[in-house]
Length: 219
Image 1 (tube, rainbow, N blue to C red):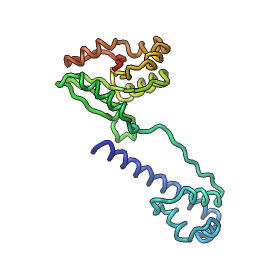
Image 2: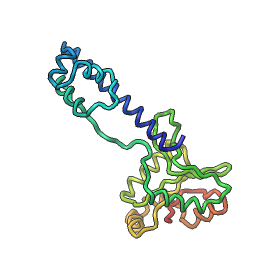
Image 3: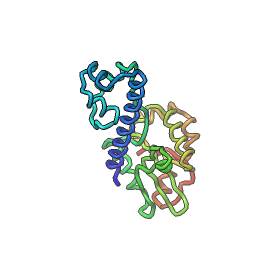
Image 4: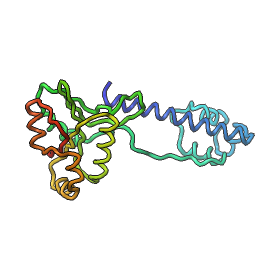
């Protein structure tokens, strides 16, 4: 299954789960107030059957305004927020950056993209941008076309390495003036986590060897 299909499936399942949970909350509140479906429908301009289908999560394309209206009538505040979740859709520049590294990697090494940090069975949707594997070693790749917050990237990679039990990772950056400036400003905090210099990382990957440590690579 491709990454596009996985995203669509995840979106569909998440949407269904949210509709079920909201519908359950609305029904619980309505029955607790001893209101009928018709009572609620008249107040918000919906039919009895429409309110019932909202409660039963049977409307795949229910309007957000209708959900909010029913919630308000029942004395509820409907909350909708977005949080970091799975791997996002990457732009052309990001894909090109990964391709530049892939072109350097020895053909005898295995290259995979959007590799889950942990088994999807655990509900963790984080993913590495790429994973390079030899016979008895592997190194994860976290790619950034524009490095904005070095500390945030450092923490994110450290957590993914810990949770995914990965011993080494490459922080792959586009070779731009801005990224070099951010790296200089970050100082030893990043170099401590990624001690191997770029030339050593690339030399190992070109010849199919284990780099042996994490490193920062600008391409």
